[in-house]
Length: 469
Image 1 (tube, helix red, strand yellow):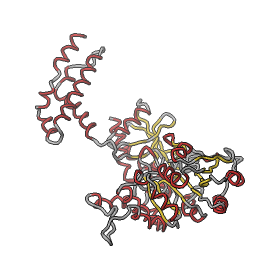
Image 2 (cartoon, helix red, strand yellow; image 1 turned 90 degrees about the vertical axis):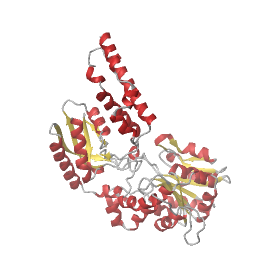
Image 3 (cartoon, rainbow, N blue to C red; image 1 turned 60 degrees about the vertical axis):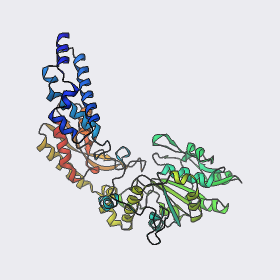
Image 4 (cartoon, one colour; image 1 turned 180 degrees about the horizontal axis):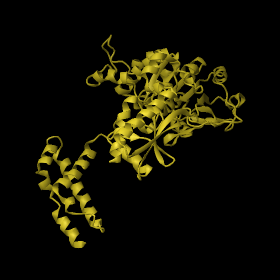
């Protein structure tokens, strides 16, 4: 065995000989020489390790030919040059999937941005005067139109919005918040920690499950800076509970000369009842109830890129804009371009459902989903006859902390592939050029068609076929 290993190691081609071959010259026409050389070294090192570790005689002369090594090099080169953030098929059934980029941008929004992204844009330029202006002016008009607020600004996510609002309005002052709203969301983001960073002094009131108006009233002192309400986001307290309505908090706070900060998290602009879902507090409702500042994410129920919307009274928004953190948290042109164009869809409820992927997914009838799952089963049967499929009823979720307990009825396609383990099949689908993300249930891969499109059906079927090969 030792002699065989030594013979195979001696037959491995050199880096210089591979660099001089026709295949490598083709790569060098498009890629830097040091990168191609590194990939050759990596492939050779990988093969040496496999040969040395082979005690079962699996390695043979065919594994040390130029052609075999170059195929390994090609794999390394593809991995090094392929963008890591790439298009994927979401077959998980989670509409706002954080790991997959949360909301899908409307196709019309993306198309409308292409020309602008190829050149200069009017990010902070006033076309009328030709002078520089504030970039938040690009979206303030439509935000105030849709929410009823006096003024608006945008920062780079809702965590930043929470931090800057507290820093601008409550630094060195007490922020009164219900104990049942001291949330921790993904990435160990904890409201008490954010309050501490902002310089606000957190004052907890009530209990985990019940908070009364008198609890807030008794907590207000000369040191109080604001009353804060926080949406529970990714959890719910049920049973023996009580929370104070926003209008009552506003009445109390304003009688004492204090602002109310309403952190809505997901930030709905329209009621979700029309999609058969429970009511989710909306930004316009909070403004109508008298909240002085309302903040939310832009990449959840608004469905734009990552950002944090802050709307409210002109006095509060001006204090927030003037805070030193404002520049550190400001957004770039892409965020504002996506946000402005996405917000425009909310002017027309029918247009919203037709053109906004999040709301189109929510509005898709279950029978349409069944038909899509059956079409996927047929396509897989044609492309991968050895695969076994079964159309199944199932449930999905809105995701990203929005209505965490609410299940969305859907249809799934269960897929099995001979003796291939479900986890291995799931990995093959993810690593395929189609990059399909599903989930595993009952020992098999299931693909939820609610978060897919009809156009993706042949793409997914092709991925299953390649996984079978």
